[in-house]
Amino acid sequence: HLHRKCSPSALRNSILTLKTEVEAGASGFSVAGGGNEGIFIKKVLKESPASKVFSLREGDQLLSATIFFDNIKYEDALKILQYSEPYRVQFSLKRKISGKEELEHFHSTAQYKKERLSQSALVLLLSPLTK
Image (tube, rainbow, N blue to C red; front, side):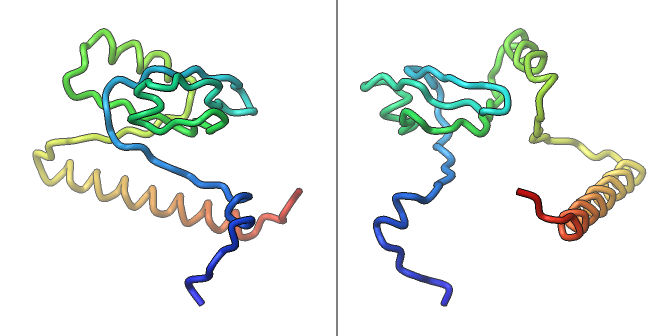
């Protein structure tokens, strides 16, 4: 069956991955951890945007944060990009395509990514499981 009922005790031990709504003003919380351990929400102020708007809870692991660049000051965008340089980053871009050559480049890049993903999946399938 695709749908199975879970007991409350099974749900209690589950891990849930959430994405919050897009809002401004993420304040009222502190974090702890870092490195291989990860970043965790350490404290959330009761009536803060972190609590009321983003529903953050103490102990939540912060997996990523998306910062939108619409209406951002140049200096702020530059700082964010400079600080993010040593870390994994994913960009969301809007691009004007002006000609056939650019479109061909876009298709070849997309094909390259598709091949890389296929190779990665194959490596995962062929790799022995380790604990």
